Image 1: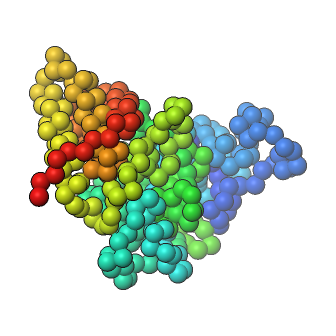
Image 2: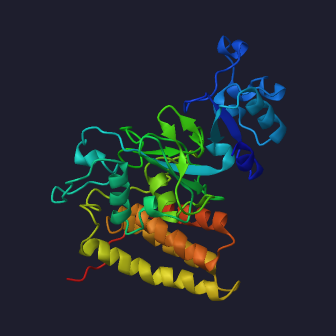
Image 3: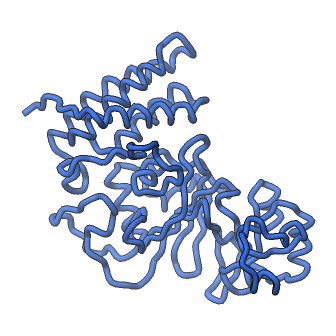
Amino acid sequence: MAAWLASRGYPVHPLAPGTKTPAANCRECTGRHHSPEACPCHAQGRWCHGFHAATTDLDTLRAWWRREPEFGIGVACGAAGLVVIDVDAHACGLPDRQRLLPGIPIDDRVDLTGLQSGFDTLALLAAHRSRPDPCEDASTLRVRTPSGGMHIWYRAPKGGPRLRCSSGSSSRVALAWQVDVRAEGGYIVAPTTRTAAGVYEALPGARLPAPLPLWLVAELVRTGHADSPAPAGASPCPSPAPAAVRGLPLRGVRQEAGRRLLRGLLEEVGSCGASPSGTAFSEKLNRAAFTAGGLVAGGHLDAAEGRLLLLEAADRARPRQSRRNVLIVESGLRAGSDRPIHPKERT
């Protein structure tokens, strides 16, 4: 499996036999304080410093596994261009409902009976966004963990934000309660790895990672997983006004008015797909993003929903320029967030 992954461009490093932790450093590195990225051992074919030593060089990998055939397999997420949603199923008490989906208040009327793991909170988040549950996404590689959890492997967005790791138990950055993120700055345990608790087993469906869905990109940016800092004085993800999100799912005449106004602009963006040029695509997308930013600031649109709708429309019209689409959308949203928009509401 290590060679199979490396041949597909996923840098691999060894895990200590029977565990999910990296193999130990050499004696020199154990007692020496130096940057893992600058460690001289890597040039000498050693596996020091965990995912920092990950490689796709097959000769190096063969030498490592000849030395210790019982090594497990780790994949360096950042170098591999992976974002892995790590869903846990730990037996522990349910936290306060406002910690289940960071940044999304859950109305007291929402029945949480039976909710007990990351599978439930990720499904709750998907339902809130009217999107399919990633745990059911057979179009991408999914791995069942020995503890009963799941790793959902995705390819990081090309030209999009650089995403980093987090912990689902964190009070500062998390996608959801008991839902971790493995990305830049971390590694993931590969299928077939055996630990004392059991085997990491690929589930039926795709054997390779699919692109990270745009709605999950938006959620990861919203929850602070974007590694790239925002320009001075700007937010990488405009925050909704306090009244913008009242419960699950998001409803109300204020939001409907915002969606209705944005819908017409999105149709103009989408119509550009019929022609490769001469349609003022950039201007239309920028106008839609600017309007969305104003609607978010005015409490008439959810930030993540607006970003998702914009990127989906842009990528349908110009699928070959995703990087440019992201830049236009982010710029427009930031500019629009300084000018709140309050559309007329139908009663």
